[in-house]
Image (cartoon, rainbow, N blue to C red):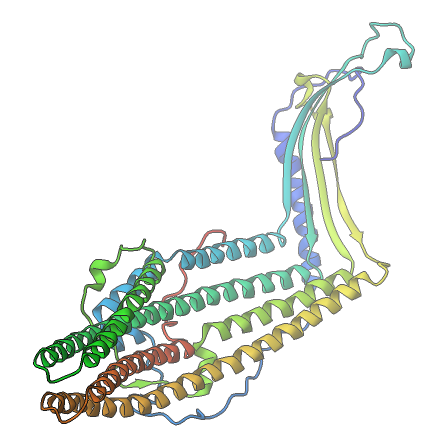
Length: 507
């Protein structure tokens, strides 16, 4: 606050006129600032920087990989894609994750932060006023002043109160470009929250699929281990009867121990998957045991799903929309930088009540004020402003290239998922045939061994084959389910959620 320097003690007494002087002066300054600002605003139709235009994205007309099975190119039906697995436990985990995941809450808080930043940018359009006051006692050195001690007016009391008002007119639109950038920034952060949601739901589903796949592999391993224990008993019975060598027993026991050693490894991986799943839904390890239970097979999508065409990605994927909004925000920053090439017009006003005695504060003669326009122009900056503009232009080109890269990666992710689904289905079909054949082989070879028609090596080969083939088939089913999750994620599934709730700082 600008304060008068006069602090002499010889001010004559004046009459008390009340607070109405403060109000009258405030109305006068406000009227001048408003009237002058309106005139400048009406004249200031110029807006620095170019108008933003969304990029014209070119994508393929159709998917490169052909669709099969439960997928078709109709309207995308991916809003609640996890329900296509018909698994209530998965539905419950997804709901819990959306409510309790800490990282998702952090992403939402960033929306609150961005909206508050936009409110800060908007505030620059309006006048500002600062009120204040002070009471000061000063004493000058009488050794320097010269008069003898006790000179009247030393020390001196000084009382002042009032306000400063100022308004920088957005004549060339730099502030408006700043608001435009902040608004696009808010929208980009909202899309980042949606993108975080899509990634979270996919991670929940992927870890759930992995957990169920490991559970199925453990179940199959235990079944095969039980069959191998029967083979050990069979070799011992034949050894006791003098019908088989001790080598058969040793080989059977080795095969059994090797199979048993796999189960602890699978259980450790299952525990890790369960712990990751618990963290994703905002729970400590063990907190979701009651939800998962002991049973439950590998989830598999059962319903027909439309995945649309590549052009639908631009509207569906939040990371693409986020990249586009980031481009819009950065484009507006060019105008913000260009505004420094032009003069800045400011309207300022000051009103104060100044006195050396408290009783004189509201006297009409204690008033002090000043108001009027000012201009500031960076006539010479050594190329700094133009360099800053070049920086913002380069950042805008980078944002555009980042947008193009995001679109390319999105199309590639969908194509990868489609290829994985198609190829893994063919692999599973072959594995299912191999499993059926291997089961038949095990039954036949064991019967022939009991009859003494084949040696035990044939039994070992058959048991190892059925073990590995069934395990690979279970892994393949899990990979097909995981590929569907990856496909729905790549398509932006789950993004048609309600808009982010009104956050603070948007006033």
